[in-house]
Amino acid sequence: MSYDRLSKYLSLILRHHPEVIGISLDAHGWADVDELIAGIAQKKKFNREILEEIVRTDKKQRYSFSEEGTKIRANQGHSIPVDLELQPIEPPDVLWHGTAEKYAASIEKTGLRPGNRIYVHLSPDIETAVAVGQRHGRPIVYKVKSGQMYRDGFYFYRSVNGVWLTLGVPEVYLERI
Image (cartoon, rainbow, N blue to C red; front, side, top):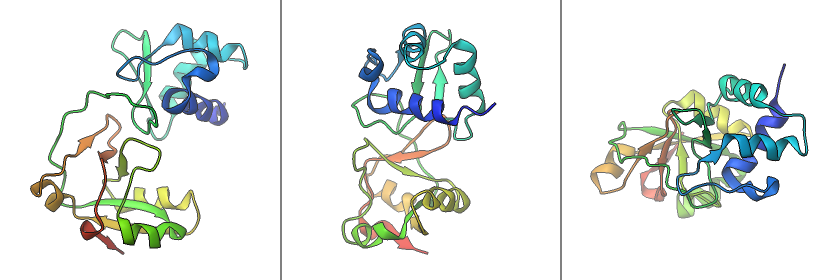
């Protein structure tokens, strides 16, 4: 059974608006699993089994349970301030960013900015970047000179699902391919 709509709703709650079901996230983005289930169940058919299925089958691995399984959080993509407890890490020399063609002029003028999120998301391979870009229209991909950025003092983080994060990418580190 596909739970795509519930997964998107879960993403809305854990990344942007926990208050829509009357819960809050702690400083590290964690939500109490029982409170989350109860909150969602007030509006939709939802239980622990469905939540575990969503987490297990999510292609992008958006969510993680705490070690004891009592808390859950989104791995990245927050628009609300949370500390995901990620440690800076040296990135590969090149990362990739996929977007829609309609954003190219702005990106080439001001670089990559997180918009309403905390971090800019970068992909470890070009195929993933193309897939990301296709979600919003005709895709374009930027090669990000991440190794040079790192040597120039920029910080990078890697989420538990392999997405690379940074606060922004100035246009001088971008190459449209």
